[in-house]
Length: 142
Ligand code: HEM
Image 1 (spheres, protein in one colour):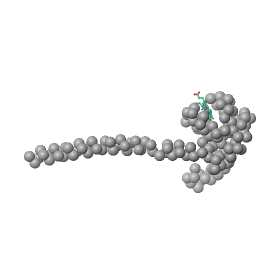
Image 2 (image 1 turned 120 degrees about the vertical axis):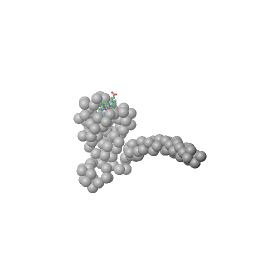
Image 3 (image 1 turned 30 degrees about the horizontal axis):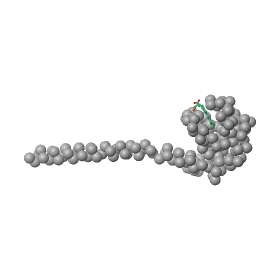
């Protein structure tokens, strides 16, 4: 988000809300949700939601990050929600959880694993090479 000046300019129109402000939009006429510190107005999405409008109205005005993730929404669903974003939570009221999650995802879990398996191969290969060299040494000198 804070990556470059130009991104900052594009996103500078983003409005900041407190949890209290969001909580006032808690019915089917104004359905706002907090998901991963973003504020979404899903009022127009209610009857398009494949999971039904009930669940969204139930969560209206609240932080629905957990139920949203529990459902295991698809990548499509995550893209679908972008146009409904109307802002973000004020800095002081954000949860660190989503940061942690994205850091976990970005931290190269795979890298650790692959370097681990690399290392586990390295020792047997080195031993094999060493054994070959020792063997050849004996063959040529005796
Ligand atoms: C803007 C926010 C949301 C969008 C764009 C969205 C979109 C979708 C989409 C596209 C699906 C179909 C399955 C998939 O592609 O994952 C779905 C299913 C569902 N969603 Fe959401 N959703 C949103 C928020 C929520 C929230 C806050 C809840 C909270 C409980 C919820 C509960 C469900 C349920 C229960 C299903 C049905 C899952 C199933 O039938 O297996 N959704 N949603």
